[in-house]
Image (cartoon, rainbow, N blue to C red):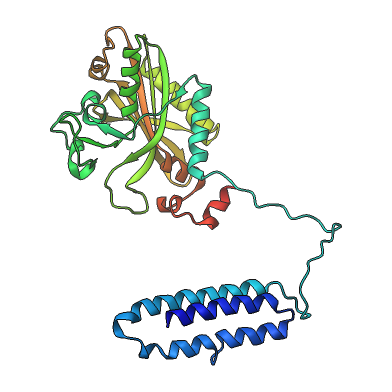
Length: 336
């Protein structure tokens, strides 16, 4: 049976090559794929095949049918409505067809815009590992071992420890702060420095309209002598007006983060929805500076972090975070 199927595939291809008019082509197609054609004849005889061979025969039937359909589709395109072999003439006086224009993903657009704003303020964009150890993700950021943020329900821990230490997919881009300041120490450099760190982070959240197990953050860090909360407010207010518009109103509310003290959340005023939180920020905690051998008596700094998806949802009026990851061309085309 399998040999017979292969034989009709070969014969169909050979006969299709010599067909020169539409009528003969239709007759040939019916000969092989018609209700009373050769393929239908072999299909009706599958009951005669031994039970242990039927699976293989059925798979071959599916393959041959698809091959026959492709053969007749390919050669059918070469025949015009007049029944003669179709040869396309090009009218050079007709206007050209422009290629479809691609565009960047909306999240990429937001990352690039935010990065550009902070680069104009003197910040340098950096990135580091997405798989991290507990020191960089927790310990050096003043998050103690009994803190609930270290729970396995809130992190993607990796199965194989390295040098006896658990590793995980980073749950925040704050890890880049520590990596960068470690690098400053190892290369015998010293402040001042300004960095921002855009990148992916991972948390085992249930996916819904506002949560995803993978999302993007942008972290910022500035360390120098005599850095104050006034510097932090000035930088972030300037950013908000650049990103959302010059009339944007902002406010800061007290908050708590383990790695900053004092800490705050920053809101922007939305005409239709009131005050909306866009990022968290604060003065770098002295323990964080000591963890990377920077003297908190001499140096101070501020840090901030924002969610890229949240910024994009506010800027573009998107209601569901899942739309950013579904690859629906109808949605993405809006940003072309």
